[in-house]
Length: 108
Image (cartoon, rainbow, N blue to C red; front, side):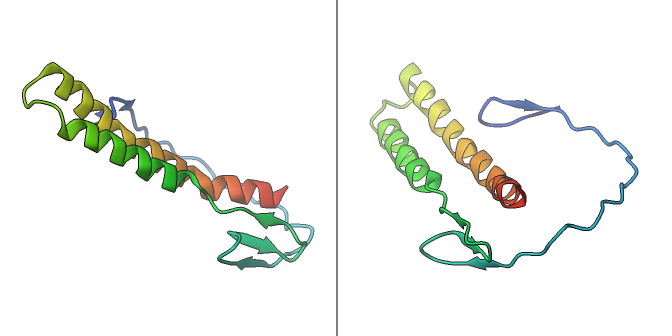
């Protein structure tokens, strides 16, 4: 069992599972990675870039400024430190889910 700084607990298990053979896809598409949009497929579907990182960095900065104004050793500083420690984990979860979400919508 693992406890992260964000206060969440995780348990890891090891399981052996047989690989399933999937049928070949009905057709192939091309994906072009770009700057204005995250990706454009050969079918014309566009995927917008993720905007969560910019807002997460803004939130981290705000919480760090709030923490720097607190008196060392105070209860309010401990609460602010806890909040500032939880924030980076939130954007990390979003970043790890983004490829799967993009792949799922492209697959549909």
